[in-house]
Image (cartoon, rainbow, N blue to C red; front, top):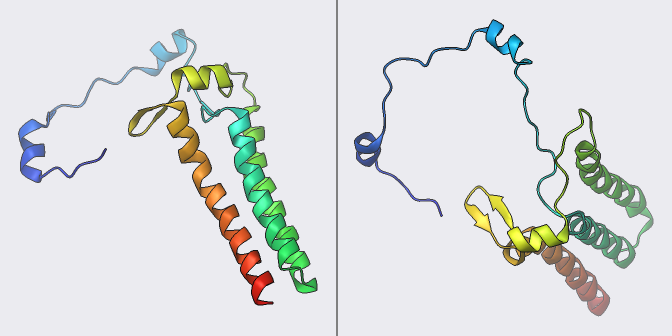
Length: 154
């Protein structure tokens, strides 16, 4: 949960450093194998949850494309499909990029047992699933509603 901190409260509790920390000489880094940056590309979400998200977006596009079928929508819908596939495909490939790293998406067991860490703290698996899937499901429901209204109105 975030909260607004007044300037006075920050000034009272802040640690102000008057000197910069000592820099590590580049020779010392070279002795220990250089500075390696650890990159976590896995997003800590199970692959199945990722697939459900992609599937919901593609299902929305399919519902809209079939429900509002018109010859003029063929090319825009194809472009939308390509954008969704690229938008989720590139990060999926990103996880498999070199250099080799030990980070892999969580499996369902670890996800259900441990949950995930977010910017606001630890989150249980159920809450994280709802947070990830709610928007795609609402968009899919909105698409079904629009197509239903169009079918009723004519």
